[in-house]
Length: 190
Image (cartoon, rainbow, N blue to C red; front, side, top):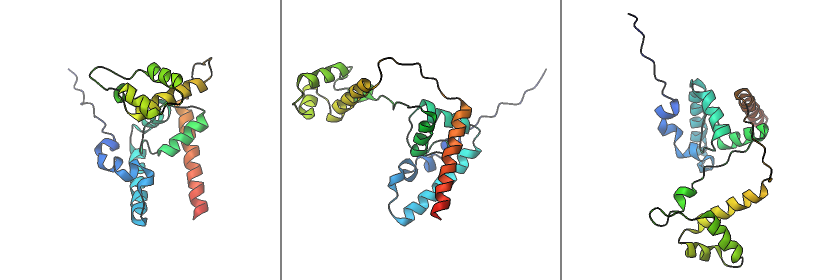
């Protein structure tokens, strides 16, 4: 009979210290207005960064936040701006989550049809977006979201190549490049 030790469950720091990671100063980098808030934001960012660097899930979290999901706030030791820089280095683009399935509901089990929004706009190019929204029984932002989605689809090339996701090593190299740039900017500013 062999006795095995129970598997240890890893609790990520972002879960354990949710108050820190979900604080408005980390969620929105522009939220800090006063000198005291900027100082507090810098201190909180350093603490969150240290917690992320110690987390055994850091590399997988970083990969997911850069390659798979367009997440907000401070994640995997990075800000949204840093993740955007890393995506630029890697030559990838991550689509934001599509909340249309939630946003367009006007009555139970009825969603605003994307094709209907585009058809109404094309049929009535001089009509205001507000009046189109009223016709559809949805919000102005829902109409705008559908039209942005249609515009983005037109701008993409017709022949789509299969996207090859970067490797974990490539994501880590981009992470190091972005952090190196940041430390060089900080050194020059001092």
